[in-house]
Length: 107
Image 1 (cartoon, one colour):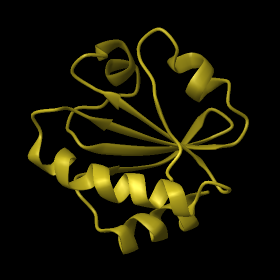
Image 2 (image 1 turned 135 degrees about the horizontal axis):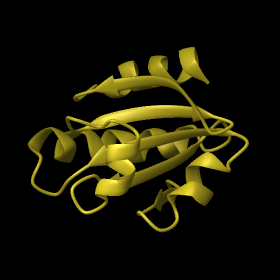
Image 3 (image 1 turned 120 degrees about the horizontal axis):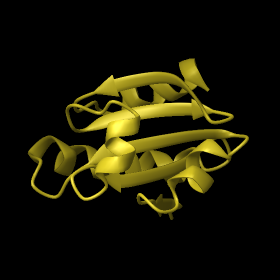
């Protein structure tokens, strides 16, 4: 089972900035068709990579403070953080094979 954490404007600093490991954050929204396609891929990969990274998601529309701070202008956006610092970013849908390459390359 995937270990996904939802974060919001109140707890994102603890979930993302203060995390010493690798964190993959998905910025999405309920109304976004590409987000709806990507979320199951994200969830499946979270289960497969649970020992390599922490998987977090947030609704970018409901949590504008986080989205604004990280300059998220389009969704879905995936950002990989390492020790609280952004290492890589991808905008748009990606299949699971591409997501795994993205994580392996940047973690």
